[in-house]
Image 1 (cartoon, helix red, strand yellow):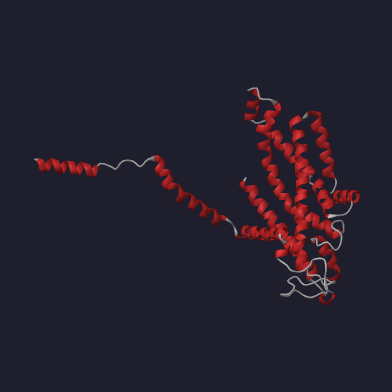
Image 2 (image 1 turned 30 degrees about the vertical axis):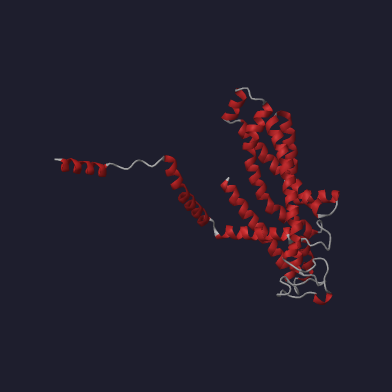
Length: 306
């Protein structure tokens, strides 16, 4: 009898499920594998073209930050004995008509081109967002006046407007960047205004006003943070466009003066030697194309993720 009771107790003990694992401990044990799996999935989803775009932009940024680390040649001074040499291990991009190393000039040119693009995007972002926020939040006659001014800017071709501003301010990379930024003010203003108007009509903003919220407090806490995200994404998209516009102005002679190593100016200086020295225009032009396409590829990727 005793043995049967003992056997029954042992069977009951074996059939009894183990105590449940605490929820916190279970979460801690299961979280790291899930994060590692998610990271692997995200890395696999990155397309090769996107990875290549990140690599190109990283290299060009490194050129702009520490150009002397990548080349030993002076971008301004040349050796007449080395004039118009084809690309080789000694001169990766060849030399120009005065014997200057083209790779060195391309590397140092990243400083002017990227700095100009940052200035241009900043000018367009700040001025355009300010106009759009004021027009969308105030409304009425102020909105009508500001939007008519924006329409006037949109009616003028961007290149013609940029050239007019440069003629008034003078030549140079900074003035060219400012002119390019002014041409993008209208696009930023329209986008910012449309986002502000859309957010102001949302239910949570109306509830904030209905609960006694002050106008500027609601504007700063609810309207602006939810309106600026698309504007910032558009600013990223404008970065590649700004590089191309500044290079175009430099090619036309309205950017940095010679012998400044600027991408557009380098292409313009080499156009007279296309038949005999193709590398003077082809290689700097290829760098411009790769940087612009890579910047647009990354910007489109970031815009989809917002």
